Each structure stands twice: as structure tokens, then as C-alpha cells.
Image (cartoon, rainbow, N blue to C red; front, side, top):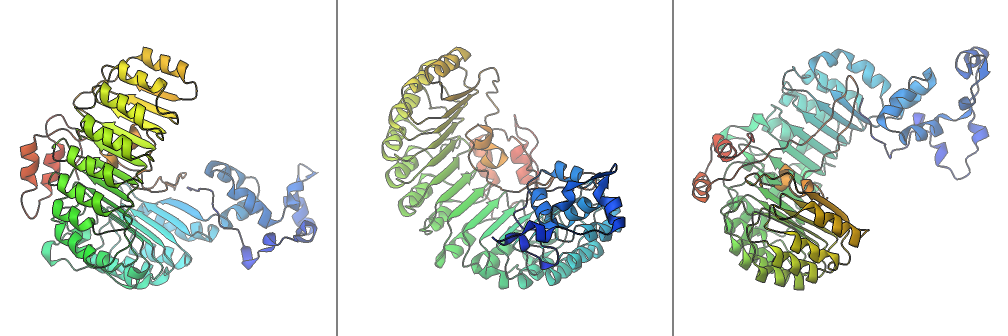
Length: 544
């Protein structure tokens, strides 16, 4: 059953002796009867010296082990089996219906679980409301819960969860069938909820008649909201508007017009520091609304064809604290030099910049390199205007640069050679799908700068597959090692356990500009719109 190292101390019977600075191990040494000594303390007629380790110390040792090592240790003896189970705080279960009968025994052994992941694959029937109710009764101290593919859980199960697990701080669900009533029950009971992530929640697909979600008592504590692949994500509007302490907002591949909601959100004072928008029907109106977030530090704009230089310039001129900026222009050429120059002139604190499907000129790159003196991470992908002069400019001007990724650009060996002397702080450079760059220049660069990590993919050329959306792998796949957009701790398990929250990967293809705009022209979109976007010429599967 999936387990990651836990920072929570083991405290059976509310005992915390091991925290004392005057801990006397001899005082904590366990005592055994003759029968216990012969059964558990003696192995092959020899004394088991580990029996003198107190349970609290043994639990701390287990918490520093990997999941596999913990499971192996639990098989050593009955005492280790008991201590390992009682000190485990993270658990990942295969949430198929067959597991329901074993839940009482599972949570009898693992009675200290605070972080739980339940996942069921598409081919299996998931646990139901009764099973979720049992889990909520056994795990009163639950602080984190992930539900994936639990399609048999309805609003009734969510009511029980909300009633019994009021200490929840993080809740994530994907491909579930409960609706607005179940979500509102959670928000009305969990006053400590800080992070909410909702993906493919099928129960709220009722169009304009959908019940509004939120704000509830959780609105005062919520700091992060992620909405992904929802047909009617606007019903979360009251929750987003009512969350006055909200810092992170991510809206990814959700249908409908989002300009009006963004305007409403930013009409009041807000403390948003991070916003992600991906494949949305949002225009410069929405971006100008976002420019009213004075504390904004991280902004990702991915494949929003209605956005142009005007919206980007408004954000750059008003969000002076901007540190990380990701733009996937989808090759519409609506975001270019004007927007990038505005960023360069106003975002002096910029440390990370990712440009995908954007065609900057040497002029905008020159201003960027000259003004953004703190820039440490840069990714340039799928640009038709990036060549050797532009790369040489970066090498000469970006003295603080530490990591650089170049993918699908018109760069040759001459441009890469500039890094033999430029960018003195550079520690890693990755070049991918650039026809003019050879292995010889990579070897030459490694010889000149032995401390520089040079990653060259010269053989793999896919000129029509340069789509690198940040949420589909994007900058991470380019080797820049930027923080992922969607963070989810996966837990590894055994026969009853499952990996949770593994992101799906896909590569969308290039569509003509006219066809992409026409899909977003209406006020509402149907589900097949995104399928047409991703199933266009030269694309791979990327459907909802």
C-alpha cells in the first residue's frame, strides 16, 4: 500500500516520549513475559537485540524508509508488523468494489492515516457511498484525500465524508459522478480546507440550471483552486469570488466564456499570486481584469487564441512583482514583440520565462536580455524567428541565466558555440529538434565548459510535432526542470494500492489560425470542440 516518508511522529496512546530532550532509552525498554520472550524476542534461540528499541524509535526508523522497505520490514515479526501499520500516515488504495469487504481490516491496521488516495480504473466498479462512509468513520484525522475514478460515490457519500472528516485541508477529485450538493457539503463543513482540485466532475454537467457551488465556510481558508476539464466550471464562480484569501487559481481546459468571471473576481481586493489559464475561451478583456492583481507573481497563458499583445502588456505594466511567465501562443502571432518588450521593460524581477509558439525578434530579445537581469531559466520552443543571432544575444546579455532550453528553432552550431564564453552562470543547456545543431558542437562545448550539462537530441526531428503546452509536459519535457503546473504526490502501492494523480500526456497538432478562432467564436462551446482542436491535421489523441 503506497507510502511516502511521513513527517508526522508516531504516538501510540498519545505517547510522545521520544520528543523529550532527556529521553532515557533504558526507561522505555520494553519488558516481556517468558512466553513473549520465547516467541518474539528470540530468533533461532538467539536474543533479538532490536526488541530493546522502543516502539516510538522503531516508528521513526520506519518513517525514513521507502514504501517497499517498509512493507518488507512489516514481515519481519508481529511487533514490526503492528508498529509499521500504526505509524503509517499515507495510504493509497485500489478503490475497486472488491476492496470494500477488506476495508475494516485495512483501517484496523492502518489506524493513523491522515493522507489517503483512492483510485479506481475505468474497467472496474468503484467503491460506493457505504464504503466511503466507513472510511470517513475510521479516519477522523484525515487531512488529505484524493478520489480518482470513484464513479459510484454520490452526494450521499460526500455528505458522510464532510460530516466525519472536518479536518480536511486538501481535497482532490477526478472522474467522479457526485454533483454540486456533494461539493457544497464539503465546503460547508470543512473549515480548514486550503486546497481544492476538481477534474472531470460529471455530476455538475447540467448546463445553465447547475446549482452554484460555494462559497461555504471553507471560503475563508481556501488558498488554491484548480478546475480542469469541466463542462460547467462557471458554477464554481461563487466559491472563487468568495475566497478572499485565495492565492492560486488554475483553470485548465474548461468550456464556456471566462472573461466575465475574471472581471468579477478582480473587482474586489484580492491576493492572487499565481494564475494558470489553459485552452480557455478568454480574451484580452480577461487579461486586463487579471492585470488588477497587484500581487501576481506567476502567470501561465497556454493556447488562448483570443489573447494578444494588449492583454500581455496590461499585465506587464500593472503586475510589477511578476517572477515566472509561461506563454504558449499557439503560433497565432497575436503575441509578439510588443507584448515581450512590455514584459522586458516592466518585469525586472522575472526569473523564469517560457515562450512556446511565439515568434520574437532580435529587438525584443535584446530588450529582454538587457532589462531582465535576474532571469535564470529560459525556454524557447517552436519559434520560427529564433536563430543564431538571437541565441548569441542571449549568450552575451543574460549573465544570470542558469538553465536554457531550445526546441524546434532555427539554430545552428554557430549559435551554440556562443555559450563557450557567454552566460557564466549557466549550468544546463538542452537543445532538441534543432536541425542545424550537431553532436560535434555538443562535445566541443562540454570540453570547453566541463561543469556545464549539455543535453542534445540531434537525431530526433519532428518538425510538425513542436506543440509543447506546459500542462502536457511542456517546459519540463524540454529539460529546463521548471516546477510542474499541476502538482500531485503520487503514492506507490502493492496489490491493493495504486499510483494516484499521474498526469496524462499528449501532443496537440497545428491548426490553421482561422479554424482555431472559429471554434472559440461562440459564447458557449460543445464538448466536441476540444476534440476537433486536438484531432486536427498532424495531431495525436488529446480528447476530453
